[in-house]
Length: 193
Image 1 (cartoon, rainbow, N blue to C red):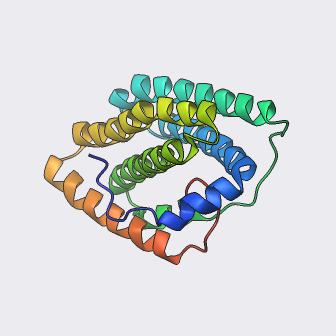
Image 2: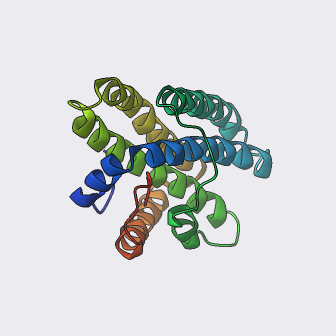
């Protein structure tokens, strides 16, 4: 369902658990960036009414997730702070073509792939945290349906605006590019690193 071409290296989970506080801060940044991207698309493409309400709702939900992650950070006695970027999103977005309407299609599909990767990794975290941190495991499990729905929404929006065969071709190219990006990135404890 998530259409990813590469699975997360099992060593990622060990790194994430070893640096859980950092992962949570990174996750909060990811939720904030996801809300920002939804709003950016609304501002960039106001002529595409089909995008407006779904992306508005998505941005609100991403900000709710941001606040929930902040709650978990603060409950652990930590605080939200700046983090260095892992480079995942910037490298992934290099697949986006510059001319319209291709730019819109590719951006929607990159967003879909980011949501899919989040969903995959949240499941890994939920499973790995079940024993040592059941409350955090339950939180990650509670996000799975939303992440999968966000992935599906971006693909659905692309399908509404573009030929479905072209959407599938580009999704295949974007997921292949994303797999290559993951293979190139240095190991981190970030949500997408």
